[in-house]
Image (tube, rainbow, N blue to C red; front, side, top):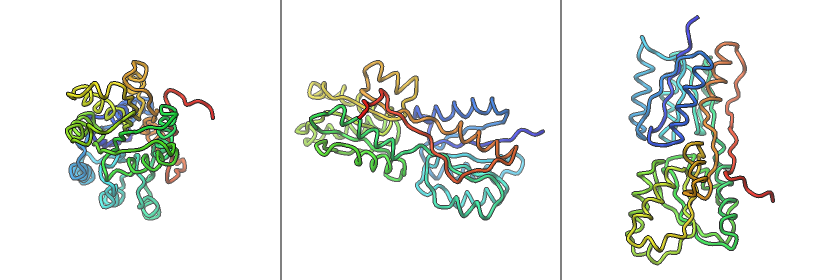
Length: 293
């Protein structure tokens, strides 16, 4: 029997969570006895669209399913329709898109989404700020790209749970260490930053938290920032969790890679016709655990 072939498209290979997504996909592929090909879009939605269209239109090497974490906010609906019309399954990771239900009505291939619970990730970060700043304070919050629904949802969740006396200032990164280091270094060159008091730098992923830390450690006025604590998200064992244990980060949020669950659901459907929900969520956890309220 022919092994199912799944193309997994991830946003970048410069982010520890995306690296974990790839590792989890390869591990699941071995356990499920399927072929997985992993490609990266370089954080560019046009590149991702072109890569996926090429896969859809390639008759000799066409995959049985495409699983992708969108770079763009739209989730590539036109590519999705073309793939499903060609008999290719379509799995969206970490993004809420409006077209899943419509496609499921129109095509007989597996179509569904698996996402992290980004609102809850943000809520956990807000609770972590409360734990780190029991008397209130100021947080420099480093968000993901403006077109990222995950970034938007994490910010909404954070604002739901942060205490009223914790003030938030925001910068933007691109889910990479270098982008956050650049953003914070640029902020540090502003005269307003020298007058600012920051207690915590909270980033929406661990690599950006470490980039922010590097920028502050390199700053000519670094003594001013020695007291600052850093938090992130993703909490991979060898990066975020290790950085918390080593003291580089005060806290992170463990966000399970969702490629493993997505591949397991996909293969059960393809081999045994197991029903699929439109959307499944993985469950995030604070690291270290938050005190019980």
